[in-house]
Image (cartoon, rainbow, N blue to C red; front, side, top):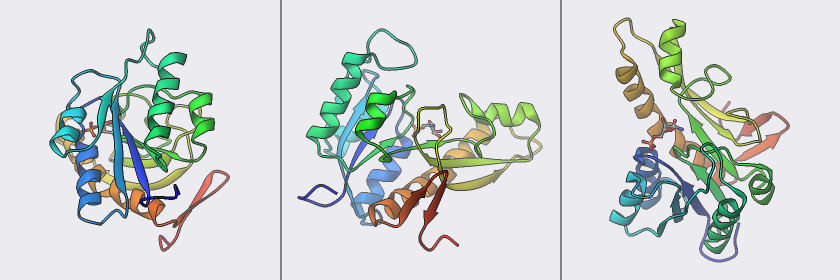
Length: 210
Ligand code: GRF
């Protein structure tokens, strides 16, 4: 943890920011013993930046560079510097649509988490709720995991199941997964901030989870 001011979160997102809102509210109410010290988006005008501004939290857009699915080297360095300047203890991906590469992950080793809208390792990648319906899955859910160099492949911290109903559309299923995310992600971040989460290889031990 940084020396002054308690546990700090740096949030990266590309979209509407509903997970960010759940996390920021949980910080404000003390459910997560941490504060959001910066919100950064690779998308100019992203909803997540508006939500941060409404809450008076520091936020900024950083241009991602020429690639579609990752940051270029200059952008990656700018993200790293902004997060370091904000003295973040944990980098929280909340709908951040780019893959983070080695240099970023080495800088924040074991300190980057993500939420994914399926029960990993099932349905990694995009539109996982639609993948679940197309596959005929009866149960899906969401997963909070540490981020490694693969896609949605890092050590799993916690998962929440969500049933797939007969009459589900991709949209209705996605909405229920989203609601589950808003409960699961703050719980996991709170446990990390309290020092209750330990990585042992691929296994993640969460105090009090058994
Ligand atoms: C969530 O469904 C999350 O699982 C995925 O991106 C989405 C972000 O939604 N990684 P929001 O911007 O937090 O509303």
